[in-house]
Length: 319
Length: 319
Image: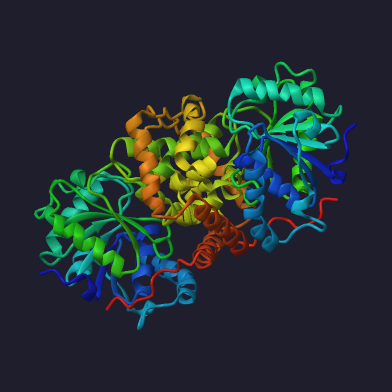
């Protein structure tokens, strides 16, 4: 029996570390009753500390009616955690065998039909659902840290997941205040983690080779592209590097630098199909906004972000 | 004769497209007299349009005393542009031969000693300075789009650049209100472009393979990691994924996923030297702030950014 996404009241969080605990804080703030279980001996103490630390921020953001940290129950067994759950979020350590076993146990213990989502950072559900009695209700619901503040959840099923479980999960997360990308195919690392992993790997190479320090890497993002990425993604941002010609001009101009050894990641061939897909994708994403509109939007966004984070450009007169 | 960085009044911008024009707007807003030259027939019209479009934002940010768009002079030749310049910023199209020739001509025309910086997105100065009579004053000063709002400039010299030219340029950019990373060795793509290029290449692979649309790629960043990167870089951000154990715990936990096929970029070996460099680098970057301090800072930052960009989580009660 699956509760409608809008009517869910009881959520179980299994695994209560940084990510699981962040989910607990999020669901509590959105007004759910949350039951949590984690096998670590000091898990409850750490979890309550995490929730307490997040609560002022969540209060400032606005709690749902009736939301309270008192509506968290920490239980001693996995079975107790999920016995009357209407949704289950699994956030165990990132080990395939462990997640496979845990999902199998959760499936055995949770009420029939209840959707069980895994916070995995990158394992395909197809690889995790192999031993569950009912794999059809197992989905990936991949959050970002901290789940109580970063809106994104990537939702995707495995080969044996039923489509209605994916649809239900996506809708539930939306009701619970998240921003959802529903993927229709499995890609290791999903979308955002592949992108940040590419950046992370290049950063590690730079540290390993003495090309940049940890601080320089961080500063190069927060003082540079990171300011734009808070509100305009890398594709539209790059489209604006093409001036009034947009992404097509950008690709004409910078396409050749894909051949440059600028990262350790080999670039794809920029053939006509890819060129067109990128240019047309940007047009669709722009959704009627002109380049001038986007430039104005970007400028407002950067100023808002600089102001909000106390980093307006220094104002001293240069003379 | 090199003017002290604090006393510079006259800046020449050579190449006045998106980046060159952005530099013009920045220097005008900081109160400099700017002379610009660009060989395109409609360059002046486009440049003035760009400056006019940027001016409201720059006014809102606060102009330097006496700053005015009227202090822009567009001239007909490269030689006129630089004849009495105290600093030259070159922002020509990204073609090595063209930049090499242009820097040679700029060096011939600019007053002796004046520092000439190239906005190149990735060419090492060593490759661009080969034909200049005085290569010692040629540096890279790589900005981000738009240069009038994104603070970062990466400064680095070539093999034949004098160290005092690099020092001068870094100081000058600081005086002119930029945030400077001075690199002591040449790496193709510098720092931030390597990082965003890795992300961009992976994004292009995903589009090419039909794994994600342009819009999904952009949304996955702006609703996810991009919110954090506006004020906390990827290294410290990842350190917080390690919970109270910080970066060391994060590497212990997620280190093995470096072996996963999460991107097309092969990861470096996470040996002890790299492990230590990353953990110690994070400690240095944290500069005395505890993990709890950083978590609180991140949470405040995300809330500020969400609020500033009008994207607080939806507030509806889930029931």
